[in-house]
Amino acid sequence: MTAATINRLGLALVALLTVAAPWLLPLVVDEFWVDIYSEMLIWSLLAASVNLLFGYVGLLSFGQALFFGMGMYGVAIGVAKLGLGFWPAFGLGVLLATVMALIAGALAVRLTWHYFAIITVVFSLIFYFAALSWKPLTGGDDGLSFSMPPIVSLGDWELSLTDPTVQYYFIIAMVGICYVLLGVILKSPLGWAFRTVRENATRASLIGLNVYLIRLTAFVIAGFIAGTAGALFAFFGRYASASYMFYHVSGEAVVWAIIGGAGTLLGPVIGTSLLIVLREELSHIWEHYQILVGVIVILVVIFAPKGLGGLWHALVNRIARPETPDPVAGDKREDQP
Amino acid sequence: MTATPILEIDGVEKHFGGLAALGGVHATVDSGKLTAVIGPNGAGKTTLFNVITGILNPSAGSIRFMGKDITNSSVHEISRLGLARTLQIKSVFHGMTVRENLWIAAQSRQGIFRPFTSMKACRVANERADALLEELQLTHLASQEAVNLSYGDVALLEIGIALATEPKLLLLDEPICGMGPAETERTVEKIRELSKRIDIVIIEHDIEVVFDISDDIIVMALGTVLARGTPAEISENADVRAAYLGDDDA
Image (cartoon, rainbow over all chains, first blue to last red; front, side):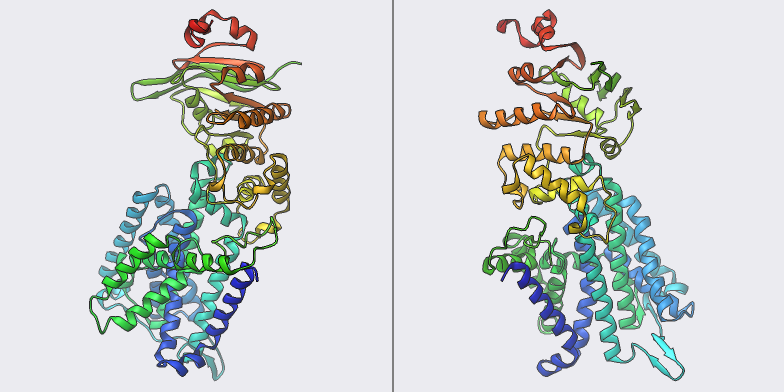
């Protein structure tokens, strides 16, 4: 089998397990793991937005939680304050996050490295405190809860996330769409332009690429992805809270992305899942479990700079039959799924 | 053949703090010729290239490329007009394969804001990348990451990246610096061959190579143009012998 075939089979298996999880998981573990699994998938999108910027464009953002928060508040304010239905509120959340990314990005992507990292933190802090203090709109410290509007209703019949099965499949569908979208973009000329900026921004501009515009585009797409995650999480928890906008949350997403493997499409899912499982299993038996997380980060950064996703690709390439030379396919590359 | 200037440099100055790296450079590059820029270290050759390609903005003066003012244009805009360049410190996309390097450079002319087209579907850039692999004899390295290439192959790849953008004028900054004799010969041959279809300006320290391949030589010293002429004229020029070639060599 070639590496590409193994990867495709692995992906198909994970997709199948994900679809079957509401039946499979309760056979092995407690039923609440179905909920935790969908939560992991939502959070993995936040890590994916960090990964898009860091792993593909070379910009380390410590502010992605800002866009996650925008997605949350868009939904919660849309439903609770504006009386919007399900889809308009969803759209409002994603739109707010994307527009916010456009505005913040227009300023931030002029900078790189630590300057960029700092300005992303500053942006998220500004809006964190704004959300805390603008009580009438955001609920301040208490957050803003809402009651779930139906996805669709036809007469008496309605489809709503209040049904756990509907909620689970809605979340995996939305998360799946985001990953497919990312996968398509990363295989396109735009995705390759992202990589050129990561590799060598001077050379990228010398071949006629507008580095600023490419970074901004990536920033807006990352904002869209983080915003979608936030909107989904608002529906998942039926509320929005400023605490999810704090830069500590952004930092966690950076850790998930790095452990999972920056520059691999599905690395963030691996990193996020692993660390959320650790949190669920360890946090109530050992209050300092974060020390273990720290040790894992250090080990991964030293011994597996491409993260667990990178390890997976190295393993697959070792056991796989060498591919027939096909100059067009880049399937052996580590930044393929 | 009447030579028309493809590049006109008019009174270009570049100051870094109190230091004048370029102190009023006047020069033209004629179409259809291979022009060499020579001069001792610190003469301002690379600074001049940086100002021409938009990496640095000049403190004064103007630059015209094919009749168009590019004095304050940005790097990518200048590239899009058909001016390509290699750097003294070889500059490629290290983590990408040789083919991907050439492909994205070719695709840059077809447009990169196409998020829903796959790489495989970009026919023009694919053909161009494959043609360049063949032309530069890099086909056997196509799926190697650039970081694994030998120094000479990286230099060749960088020229390939420049060619993939289909330039009208190519600036080469010390293309053979650091190469062994065989690689030097291969690269010089390539440059000679290219100069038949693309206008080339080359910065080079190897005087033998310069006198061998160039039609026109611009001698720089201390941020200005000291002399300008054919190789024969330059080798006869007393100022140049004194300032650059050194009286000892004469």
